[in-house]
Structures are given as C-alpha cells and as structure tokens.
Image 1 (cartoon, rainbow, N blue to C red):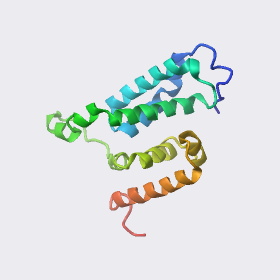
Image 2: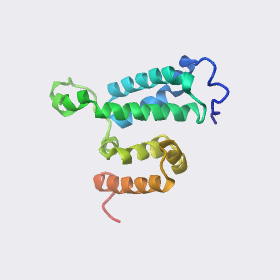
Image 3: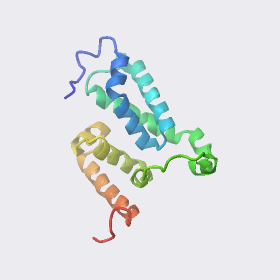
Amino acid sequence: MEQPLEAAAPGPLDLAALVEEHGDHLLRLCTLYLGEQSQAEDAVQDTFLRALQAWPKFRGESTVETWLVRIAINVCKNQLKSPWRTRRAPAEALEGLRTESPEPEDDTLVKAVQALPPKYREVVILYYYQEWRAWEIAQRLHIPVSTVTVRLSRARGMLKEKLKGWYYDGEE
C-alpha cells in the first residue's frame, strides 16, 4: 500500500517515477471520463504538469495516487466544459472518413458509462474501474458515504435500463 508523502513532499519530485507508477492508471481513468484516447492523453499530460507545478504546496494529507486522481478528475471536468469540446464535430460525423480497419471491440458498456451524468459517471469509474471502496470515494470527493452509495445505486439503475437486452435479459 502506498504511503502518504508527508516526509517526501518537501524533497524534489521524481516526475519520471511518478509517470511510470501512475501514468497508465491515470490514462485509463481519463479515457473513461472523456471517451477519447487523444483527449485522455492530453488530460494526463496536463495532470502531470499541474502536479509538477503544485508539488511544493503538496501537504501530504493524502497519498500521491489520491492527489493525482483528484487533479486528473478536475482536468477532465475542465475539458468537458471547454468551449473547444462543445464546438467541434462529433466523432459520429467523422465515421465516413475512416479507412477500413479491424472489427472494433464491443464498447457498449463504456459508452453507457460515459453517457451517465457526471456525478454518477465519476462514482462508477472510481468504484468499478479504480476499485475504490465507497468510503474511499467519499473521502476523496469530499461527500458523505451515503451520497456515494445512492449515486452508485442510481447509476446502476440507469445502466441497467440502458443495457437492457445487451447484458440484462429484461427480467427483474
């Protein structure tokens, strides 16, 4: 288990080690949050840049992983609110421009998760993909545990409805 960085915070930041240890994890998180690999890569780079800039102020009140995930989520939220994102052509409009490629993987579940409202998507990603417990999510998002469990329950209901016939057979 990772140690809080209370003693390490004042020292120099080993960015290469940080990227090596947390880069893939953050890329998966950002890809799930944003839905596009290239935007996720930009978000991860921005996350590490912000972490590098904020390192001298890091107080070690959480693990480095928790701190980086929080930065990454904030970066993703900012990207989703960006005017650039809202004014660009949707991916579906570009489908006709693609060249022939191998059969894509079934991304029904990923698209269903990405279509959830942000507050539900966030807890689903952290619970199922990051494998955090409800109390860990609550602590890191600064919300009560009961709010996390309610959001998870509502998100499951939304996903069950969206995935009826794909995963669920429609029976209760």
